[in-house]
Image (cartoon, rainbow, N blue to C red; front, side):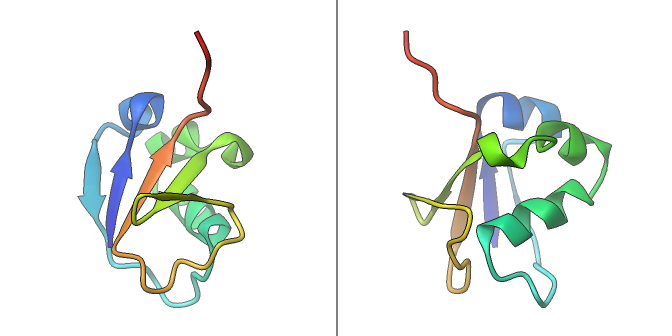
Length: 83
């Protein structure tokens, strides 16, 4: 699965995107965020407050309870701010 990181999520993880093989048992966006946080200090730092991370599956924004089965691309974004 292709994971894409934007803005400060990308900066803290240290890469713009990666292709990963997800372990069995990951069903939802929330499960994915929990698994990513276990992958190392940079992921833990970027995702220390997973509730604020916005997620898109195949370029559509989704809630953290959304199932990830069948997704080819998941993007993670920091909270959006106005200006």
